[in-house]
Length: 125
Image (cartoon, rainbow, N blue to C red; front, side, top):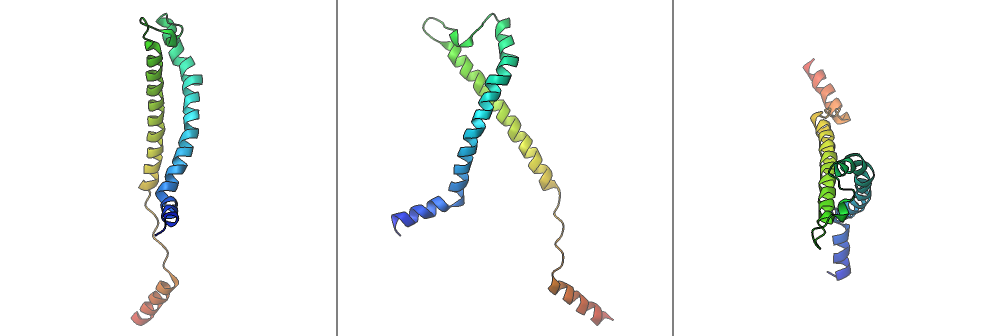
């Protein structure tokens, strides 16, 4: 099997295409989550907490030459992003469970089945 043909089979597998779509959607979703953290959650929750602790800018916290404020900011952003993703995934899973809970309706009998039922009923008479 040629290299090009083998590569084409690999790329056309459903898993590779699904993964490519997931990466693109994940990148777009990342900007939404970043905006939520930076534009909504930080001004509403983190800024008042920092002011109460008499810290105006978390990034400027240092201990000697160690800038631990940057690390704390990255950890807080990660925790908020993880919490938001957990909430979104939990919500999506609850929707999918509700869909699975409804049993599908039995299929209608085919024309062959209807004809056989008519023959059966006429034989009973």
